[in-house]
Length: 588
Image (cartoon, rainbow, N blue to C red; front, side):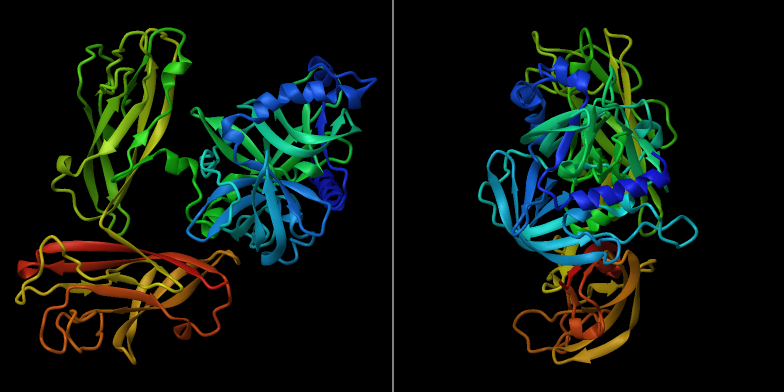
């Protein structure tokens, strides 16, 4: 579909969004192959539905449900993203909540929304967040492709009538490799709701339906996915999404992991295809709305206390099992050849990482183990099995005792891993493993909660002669801006650069940083650079806080960012402790 046609598509989708008849289209030949009769499509649709229902009920689609809106007969498809302490989040299309979404991006209240699959899951009055129009690279001008921004995240109260405890949060594609997502690559799968069609004709039955098409074409400013549809003939393009499917997720495999690569927005008026915004261009925006949304890159990451556990690559091979190797690469080393001992143990992977604050480099040692059916892990390159079992997931983990000299900091890097069939010589699959070692203290500031660290050196309390000194280290997104005073005492003004998620811009935000006196004293708070309280006693803790009165004129919104603090203590300040404080300021 070219740009001219896509504008017609969008108009059709918006007009149909309020209609009761909404559709999923099946190619005529595929309909017959599934047991349908073209002369009696209504009566034979149940046979087709029962066969496609097997796929639509696959566990990976457990998060997909039908959205309905109080006071309206329109329905859409949504994908549950997860929940935090107070809210549930659902991904859908912007035109499902606002026909004029291009003119008024940001957020708006929506009346009671209900999401259900086989039963009611949750409902309530909430907020719908809509991204601003995509900007053309280098021009600052908004793209004229409406579908590129036709996505919304609905935030509902956390009142599920039946929790989705058996549904893992879906993975959102945040990598966007065009070589993988382009034509002829992995198939796209889809589950949606609505009144069905056969070819281009409506069939008066409704329900949950699954379909698949070959990999989509990247169009527009590389922010749009489009798919062809052939209403007749033998074809792989046998499925089309239309208005009833609006907001439904496009699912695709990468390295054997299913992730959401886009959402349905519009159908061509002549039934030649359909399209929707690409998730790789919007994942950072979704994370701004819901920081705990799960992405593919996070799934492929190892960190402190969060080992990477791969899928079972042994299911891919025709014979035997698999071993895991570290191919030759610049910043990592590890096992390079398979073995077959079956002895318990682990391998060592060496990875060069970089500190996000200082850009200094260091080496991290990780443990690599391969699971076996007996529960006794072996070295990652060992293809030993146990009886007839072929379980062979890879587990990569970080252990502090293996890294006693690792400097404090937020350390990032990566290593390529290759799964190799040891009997099936044709099988090789390489995948990247990201390394994120947050070897520091972590905290969070919200609109109503300060970050309070009562003791920055809990494992080595400071003596009176060795006070803990705190500083704001040099960083791109935060700076000290003098001192000020409040009823609680003086504080250091910190100006942080945060992301205004709703307006897709950066802006300054003022925070208060101060030292707290020890319990049992009447001393006031003091500035960040102070080391003793009013009674001369050493200070150990620090606080970072948001106050609305320090930010006059700040519009209601979501503001995300991060600030690093640095503390030194012990004899001559030899001990260094870093603190990474996440800023999640919600003023809605």
